[in-house]
Structure formats: structure tokens, C-alpha cells
Length: 303
Image 1 (cartoon, helix red, strand yellow):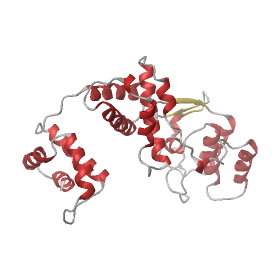
Image 2 (cartoon, rainbow, N blue to C red):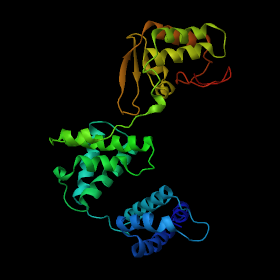
Image 3 (cartoon, rainbow, N blue to C red):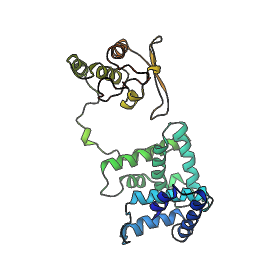
Image 4 (cartoon, helix red, strand yellow):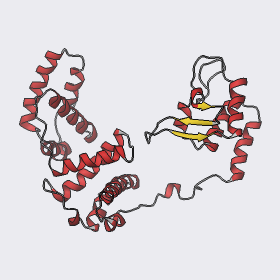
């Protein structure tokens, strides 16, 4: 019902939208006006929900819909934003460090705050934060969670908790004993994979482009960017001709996941591969975007 209200409201005039939100707010105020009540709805009602079809019963969908509805109601001053308690104030400071020091994206910061909020609520409820009251066993139990949690889930939980403890260490707290208690689950899927390719493997990879193949020069230029510059595939996609300074022999990598730009030296081999592609294979186009790692027929715009 909440999801339907939100989707319908997108095309409503503001007056009708505000009226509809007001009706929703009254219902919300009676049933789920606080995060505590939303939590009870998600954990108590949703797990045993017998409401008639069509009703979405997914936890993530319902939680996202309710949180979006709360944001809309607060934006229209229909529901007052709750006063920040000690834990929420702590999360505000934590988020500032995630943004200013580690340069994490909004989605990553939101996810880590949600996990840390759960940890702090379990330990302190609505009271003040006494970090010394958290035991190593409590940290370990929280990260390991339920018996049916996958290794990937545990790794995500551990990463968020470890990040929060690094933040507390930055502000001067002694949390070494808690950081040691954060589990590091084995990731057997990648256990037998080498950390890097050997020099022989790299040469075999390069030599694969000696044989005729579609877009051979483009593929070779992409691999040289990946190997010589250490770029991610997404960074190669965003690379443009304006990012390459041929005179200075450098490449500017635009801000990506870490929200920072890097200046990298352009090796002769990488530069030659790029020039060979640009002069002899790149379609004639006014676009400045460089090399796209996808197979495009000859004559199409792009890398």
C-alpha cells in the first residue's frame, strides 16, 4: 500500500499530493509513526503477514518504502523529524569521517551506518554510548549473526564494524581489543586464485592480440590500460581523449569510487597502443570518449 501511494504520488499535482500524504500521515501516525513501530511492523507483522493479495511481503522492499514515505512526510512538515539522540549524533559524526576522510559514496555510507546503528542500538538502546561497555564477545556475536548467514553477509557486517572501530581509534579511543574480535571469515571461493598474474601470464595475454581478431587494436589498448596503469574496468570506460596529456606523458583518471582523481604516468607501451588504435581503428567521430570495453561493429561511435 505504501509503495502504491508513493508511485501514484509521482504524477500528482502538489496540492493533491500533499492531501494524499496527509491521509497517509494520519494512518502512519496511528500505526508506524516511529522507527521503533516500523521495526515492529517489519519484524512482527511482516513475518506472519496474512493480508490479501496483492501485498509485497519482502523485507527490503517494505523497509525502503516506509523509509521513503517518512522522508516525504518530513519534507512536507507533516511528520516532525525526530530529535537526534546520542546514537544518531554519533552516526552523523561517523558519516562525516566516511565522507571527508575515506571519501566513500553515499550508498556505501548509508549501508555502513545502518549496520553500525544496529550494533549500537543492541548495546545501548536509546541511552548514551559507553564504548568501554562493549565486550569483544558482543562484537563477535553481532558480526556472526544468525546461523544461516552467508560468508558474504558476515564479511559485509565485519567490514562496517571494523570501519566504525577505525573511526573511534582516529578520535583517540582504545579499541584495539575490539578490532581483534571482529571475525575474518575465510573466502574459499577465491582461495586458490593467485593475487596477481605472473610476468609470463601477462606476456601470454599480450601475445593473444598478435592474431587477427575483431577490434584487435582496441582490445590491446584496453588491456594495456588495465595492466600498465592498474585501472578498473569502469575507469577505462570513462577514459576520454582529454584525459591523456601526450606532452607530459600522463593520464588523469577521473573521480570514481573513492571520489578522488589520480594522475598516472603514461608508459611508452601504453601510449603506443592507444595511438595505434586511435589512428588505425577508431571510427571517425567527434566524441571525445576514449575506449569502451565492448564489441561494437566497425563504424559505430565510441572507443
